[in-house]
Length: 406
Ligand SMILES: *Cc1c(COP(=O)(O)O)cnc(C)c1O
Image (cartoon, rainbow, N blue to C red; front, side):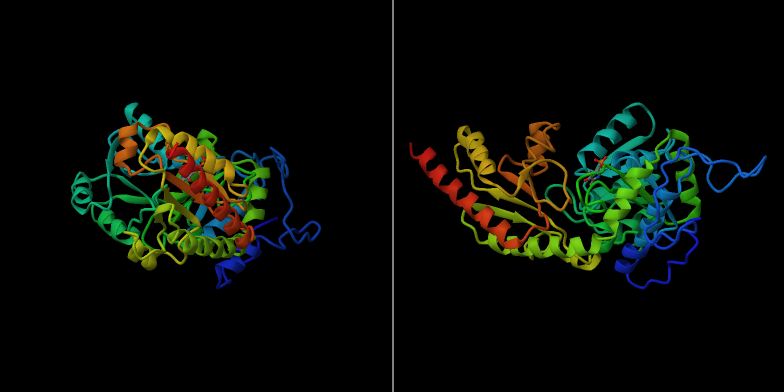
């Protein structure tokens, strides 16, 4: 029977990530906990259920991942969901049609779409605000929302929101706070310690970290909240498959080791990009010029491995598609793809990819221009990444010169 060992004794999150659930197999003494794919579990005898009866309601493999993530975030327990969006949707089950949900204007596109469409159907009231605009935030809180959604750093400009300050203000009006911690993981940011009530993850990203599972998690601070969430997860069927849970826990074991290299690589690329003549602007919370730098220093223990840049496309928009195409096809080691947080480096063009669904006007006001590129820095050797970026930028400059002086 799993979950019998006491893990809370570990004083470092790294140790928790590596050892959570280890050496708990009573049948064979397997060091790594086995995977239970079974959809059902027998009754010991008539009217004598065991701990588990049916995998939608509970599964030992999924529970091990829940336990590990709850320990890492410092929560009471976690619900493991089939996707990050299922985690977002699960939290929304706490709301009734009279309740108001207060969300940031620049949250993850999929979350934004769900908030908008669910509120249009009358499931709750929605209020969208720039949470760094103190006056707007205060006004929105005066309307007594039931739940405040926070996502920091934001995507793709990596804006930082002050979790502790927002939690204090929200709690004063009796609202719960849920934080999407996907971009940093509990190793770099612990929202529950900063006052949040719920943390959600797309475990698809850094937590699994190998770009081969989609998944999510909802970690609650209190038993009461967890029980409500777990009840709804079973009710609506938003619980993850054992195999995905197993794979994700395997990813968790190396989270700290991966994050160290992600961060080192990001720093060395930043140093290079900052001074490059064809890069107009670099967005990363570690930069003193970044508007959220001070809050990031205060609330994060790592700056993250996502960075965005503005490429100098010149002043003639008719050439932009060709220029962008040339740059992306010159890169060998940054795959043009959505998603983030895997071992492999990726590049994304938000205006035509992740943020293509929103109007050009909305994109502009959100600061997402056609020259904006978003990088997810992987764990390849940093010299290879640097060499690749540098040859692609060089080739881009030559091509731009030729094209614009035709
Ligand atoms: C990817 C992502 C989600 C959605 O997760 P899925 O696993 O794709 O369903 C939610 N929030 C953030 C910040 C994300 O990056």
